[in-house]
Image 1: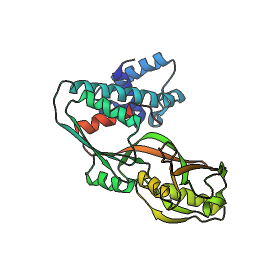
Image 2: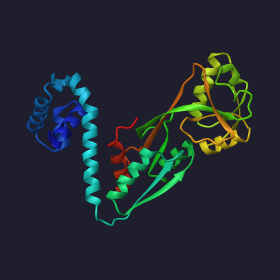
Image 3: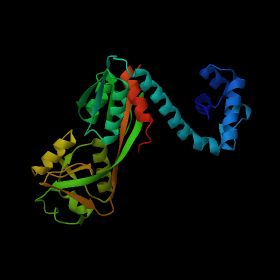
Image 4: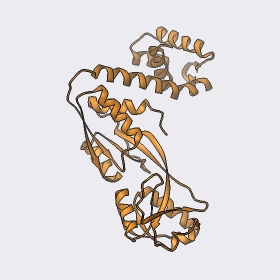
Length: 289
């Protein structure tokens, strides 16, 4: 399998039109067709069914798309990083992050730094709403944040992780000593709002059960949420992996599991800097989530 065959296949899978795919790849249609046929011989089955204007992927073709896309992205990332080795270029990137820097993101940043000696990172911490505004204003080049419930147009996202959420309460809260609690027990407590999407999910669950939680306070950052909980202002939903102080206790709720998706976001169609593009490719090369 050669990389140009993968590129031709991905173009054909995206356009479902061999003529347009050949134009996009700047090759003749017969050349593109032969390359895809060689892939089919190697995979032992058809990737496309060509039915005039109804060309479509076979089941094998559909299964191959994500695997070959990752292969192609990894190869492109390697090429880009290799070209940067030894070049002392000025390659700045401003990255917005809502929450802590994960190990996976740290690995991607390290990879880019090794390939681009001139790589300069400016890290901006803020809540997800502020980061989205900064992203579209061009104040940050990319952002790591919870997946928006209603993503704006032109927002490109790559799934980084699925985070399990847990409830945290002050250590002296009446329910803090219980191994597991019921939903009615929680609805009677004071709540601190953090992620608006998580708040909406939890409120909907309560309403279905005929309950309505009271959100008295709010905080944009998870570290501030935990600090408010520790000081007895209420309880809150936070990632289960978050480090907690001694004054805070996590709780499990019988019959309820809350999850949150974290994504790497850029603006579609906007020209990327060398450093931003390298970071995007390094992240896409990892099968996260």
